[in-house]
Length: 97
Image (cartoon, rainbow, N blue to C red; front, side, top):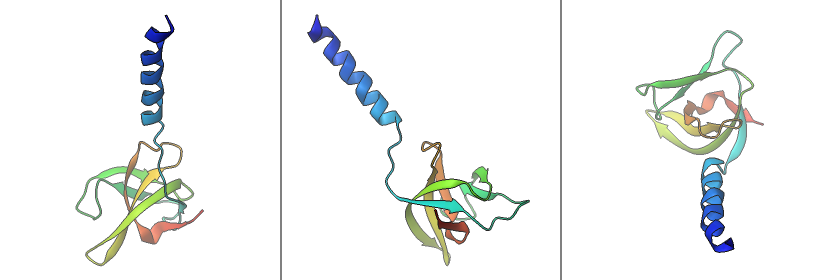
């Protein structure tokens, strides 16, 4: 009987591991968007990409790679509280956590 449950247990463990959104990177926060504005989380590094979400000042993020597009530094980030939600933001609006 223990043999039959081992593959199920392993499958469950791998599914949980894949879904936990383990991301390595620096912790940063959205800063400077302003009290009435939201920082746009975009699908790619540039203004031509669609907006995924708006992030208010103080939002905790995990920063991954950054790239320069048309003279602007864009960083790939994910939300600290929801690692599955990721995209690109202008580095001008990020500060160290």
